[in-house]
Length: 141
Image 1 (tube, rainbow, N blue to C red):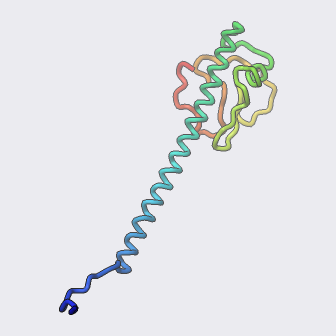
Image 2: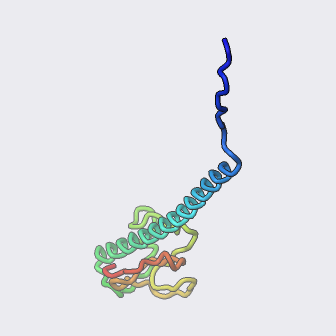
Image 3: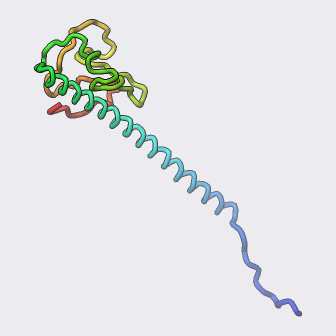
């Protein structure tokens, strides 16, 4: 059998420039995905923190209704009456981003022994140390 005369050779494979373009495109897509993932994780942690604050707010309102306290009433040992096994908040909340929570009317980092008070409507009971984890609107809380 005779070989075919003068068949064109096919160009198989990719040039170095084409390979470089493909790798650069993949790297840019991966980096965009990583940036998006970081933003998603940060937003997710913020939402989780706000939900923990909302849950604590519901617990304090439930506690005050059950024991007939009004907003502004002083309650000795309020945190210990809310947090613990078989209580309204089973375990002390943890910020998913590494911040810490402050209960009640104390400011962040304060260690004074202020009396614990049922918060007024619209005042948050559980504060996160990370500023961006604070809910923007607490009307009706």
